[in-house]
Image 1: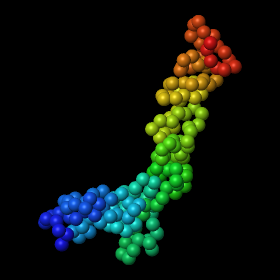
Image 2: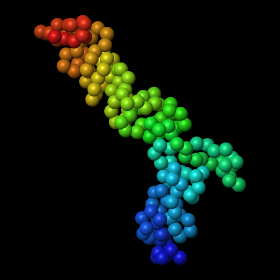
Image 3: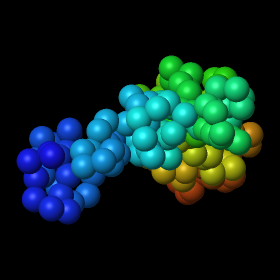
Image 4: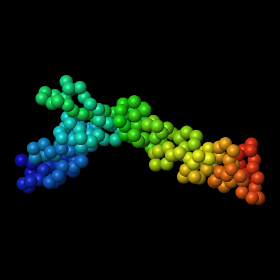
Length: 173
């Protein structure tokens, strides 16, 4: 007996009687027990029974010998590289999102985005074609590329009147 009314389970996480197990727990008889530490959702407490991995872990196919007798396949949650928040593989080139304050670019995490990109919401976003660097939005230029000139936060091929182009700095003066 779990001390709960009929149809309710003793939840190890909340320490209360519930009719549905909390995330991170699974139903085991009339108790909600903890999933394996790498699992956010599971079908039982073993490491090969995860349904959803916690942050910084990803599903990985496990060799049949590790799954247990009678199972034909199983998945485990294995650690992502330290800078990945989520990933689809075990290398640092398999990130699908990054831990703050890093930004995702080509499935890798960086503290700064490369030239022609700016960082927002954990992603590197391309600047407009005529911006060499930008900030806040793809059209808010901080420097210009090629034969364009910065005036305010925009790049122009011809500086607005009455300003003139300063080719050495790619700015309008």
